[in-house]
Length: 121
Image (cartoon, rainbow, N blue to C red):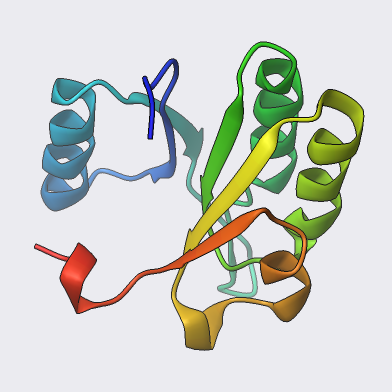
């Protein structure tokens, strides 16, 4: 495929030993782990949305790379992937679980790679 220039992982900061170990493992293999604070609202719901942060990082990188790879099924990213392909002529790949990936996202990229058992440890 090519050389990985930058790899980001996005997560919510929680005082959970398992999450901390996972984030440390990601750092160990070269990811930059970006964390947002865990926010619990008065009604019990939680917030920790990274969509804007991911979009900013992708737009900033897109002019300097040949390919952007996103691991998501979120249809909100279809506009982003279309834009980087159009503006920067950057290839756009998405890894996602087929049953959980929006058709609009799948259709917005050069290649959709399904996450299945063969990709899992």
